[in-house]
Image (cartoon, rainbow, N blue to C red; front, side):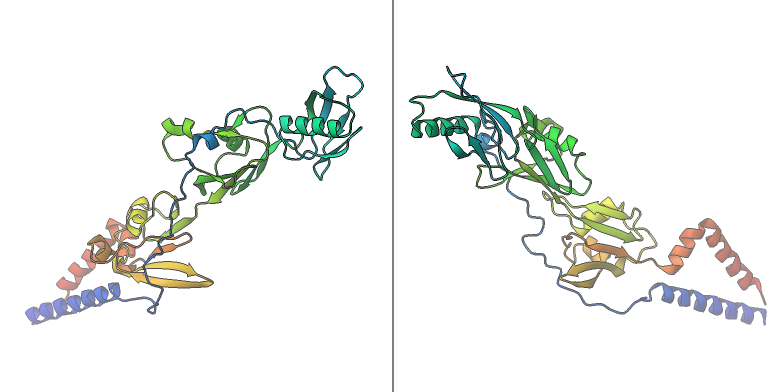
Length: 331
């Protein structure tokens, strides 16, 4: 009789463990369909940096006039013609003997030549030597836009890192690829800040009044669930971020995670899609390692039984062992 009860208890205990194992492998949600994991060739494709030294480090670049600038006009050898005028919002100045002259975006030397030509055309002077002096320049600024927002005065010679520091530094989610729009250039300047401080002098280019520095958003992917470290991972333009790389940054999946039930949540247009992935097959090279896109959410669900054991620690395991021992000894 005792032997029969013992066998009966063993069968009962085995059935309980089979039930628990069944719970561990049970899916907790309905199957979702999502977009294909193939990624467009344009995803995370870096912009081509500007390398022309004549563009990055122009020699003897003169100051240009902007609306709001106040200038004093002097003629060599003449003390009668010394007007002080301010550039109007339409970029012009009103000068004696000449009238209206358009000087917006002209360099100092270009504006001097323009005024001299106008004086000659008016029949007032034969060969005037014009000299301009900037008295006030409230709009001699560079603009930082995008992820950062600032208007930085550019007085004298300033460089990119000076302007970024004055704008509050590079935001955490800003791309390391900067775009600078500059007057007189048909194409914007593209700079890759990189990660090597030894090469910083190659990208710390001069910044001039009128420059617009665009800090684009690098984007991020979000690791949630049973990863050892959850949170946002910024994307960088110079290297695509795959799922395995992201899992590595998140310090790997936890023991309690459902490795075969990983979910990639991606926004396509205005719709949010859920893609089911098998992390084991990806690690084994049996499935492709997808390239993640900005705003992707990677969710690793937890196994309820394993989570309970992990949260309870060793005490939970000892408790289960004690219950099993009592069950085996009972009649």
